[in-house]
Length: 324
Image (cartoon, rainbow, N blue to C red):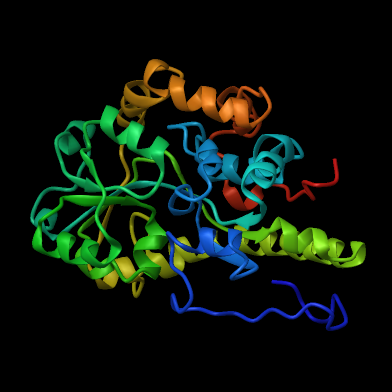
């Protein structure tokens, strides 16, 4: 992420992968404890250790991936997302990939017709990640969120102990879930954001020119992720209809269920704060307080609609968000 050439070797990054030092649920805490300086994990899994990250998880706040990227590049993401996260949890949000979560149905659904109606999912039992707001959406959609340890999730999907898991398409691919997933239902009901954050103490201890290098590297990483993931979704994952041959989904017979617009709208009316405000009030008030009184849902919802709902994500204009 931070090139040695950009800092003349003053910053060197040691990458520790394969869950050797921490995992999706624990990396945030290891960073806050000073064991590691930078981590990558989903904001949803990290919300257990940094609850303000729930601010991204209001249901149907983002119409599409383009609106997610537009928000992350937006100067107002500083006061709405980044500054409160840094102040409350000691984390500097650097960059993220952007997808929207759906329900990944396990092998008990492989002989069932491809899902086209929301009601088909009602009453199913689905693994949920660490996001508290995501659970609210799932409960309102009658998706029975159950916390299942990651090491038990793949077997649960294979054996039919759970119907599905809420996550996003490329997560199915990189987490080797494809062999135990039969349908990828594109519900788009809240964020799937695999982000990278840094200890704010470590960042603040850097000299100004090195802080500039970190931010510029973060910006360039964000631009790269935006383009690369959009290509990978179609050419590597197989998140399209029809699918390209030799993609992970095609090789593992994972069907993509793109729900009709009226079904997505039905889901939105069932669970979003715009249509069902009461279940969200407690968390919304809490997040607004942590943000210094900003109406977080309304502000992000508004920014997310500054770009057309059908805009291609790769066409979102990159901006250096910290330079307003």
